Image 1 (cartoon, rainbow, N blue to C red):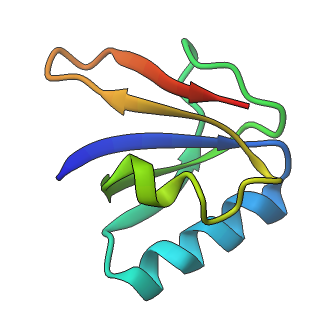
Image 2: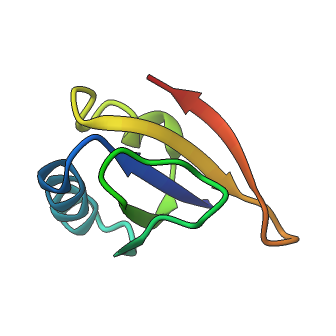
Length: 80
């Protein structure tokens, strides 16, 4: 499993995604979006899991998924 950052169009989307991570057993935290990733609402969820599965949880609110790389940078793997 890898670490990812999910950004959202609204705070509600971030909260709902975090609840889904908890239900699925994916470790997750709500946090401010890192400066080098843009976001509509400014709130993101950092989680450890599978991006392919997580992308389908909240597709209307999900803005993008970025993988956290070993050097601390991000690689966007999906954008709405």
